[in-house]
Image (cartoon, rainbow, N blue to C red; front, side, top):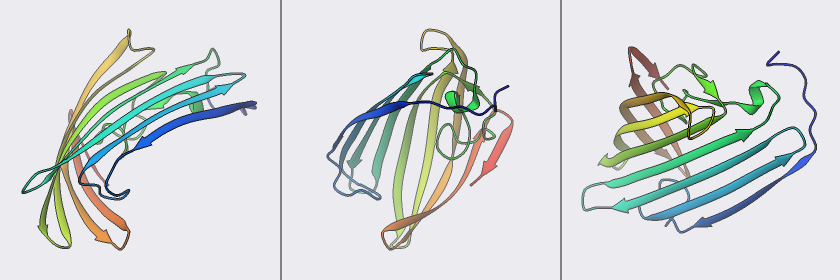
Length: 168
């Protein structure tokens, strides 16, 4: 059963280099994150790279992300999921799950007025048992509206994938 109780003992190790000009809505710089989850029943390796380039009319935001689970136990917490507003927007949440997910994301963040930024985006990725055995290649695209609220951002997005549409 993918939902049985699990008990695990271990540690999470991480390394991060943050050269962004600001944490929320950066316009310049990059963020590198590496994380290793070491537990007695599973291990997960995360690699996340984000790059931001400011131009005269917008910010180009690019992301490369990869995650791999190593485990012989079948539990939903050990699987990577496609869908929702994090990974390959446009697919229903958890429509596809497996032990490996890799994706590329590109956004063009264009300010319209001081309180609104339009963000068209495209995403491409694959999900499978490992990087060498991708079962599904996936593509999504859409449009987001970013509205600054102090040091936060309200994101309203519509995303499309295959014959599906999701609103976040």
